[in-house]
Image (cartoon, rainbow, N blue to C red; front, side):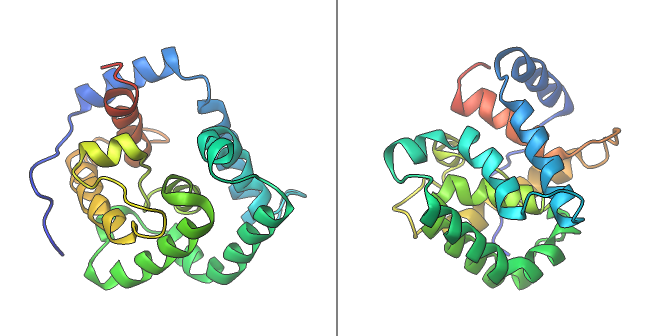
Length: 205
């Protein structure tokens, strides 16, 4: 597994500061929490919504630029999401029970295939968001500005799977720097994304 190009460690103090800023400025966190719960309910078959519909809750609120400028969220697009879920459901369920410290070279081909398939339909940002919802402790979130800040700037759609794996090794390093900080309902990957979003996407920190 290639090492991250340099140290990207984050501290608990930085994470806590980002959480305060995020809560003060970003009301859309509600949609993340709703989508996370809906995905869990859909997997347990405790809701009338399908897994694809649960993902759509987040995609249409956290990935609005993609649907404004790249494609429409129409019937065909939704059918494509359902097809992806059916195709990769088994692999996604296996990864849902894992955390990013376990990511290794053995996983690289599987992750690149998953990401590439989702990226062709959802774009590189939507693919990461969907993978994170389906395996929230294994797949990190990113966007264009975050990727650039970590020296894995996004390329054309369909060409970012290898870049995402490199980003995973960076997120893995950051996760390990925080994993000893046990907290109730604590997902270090989500906390790291809030830090990245506040610092690199929005420039609030």
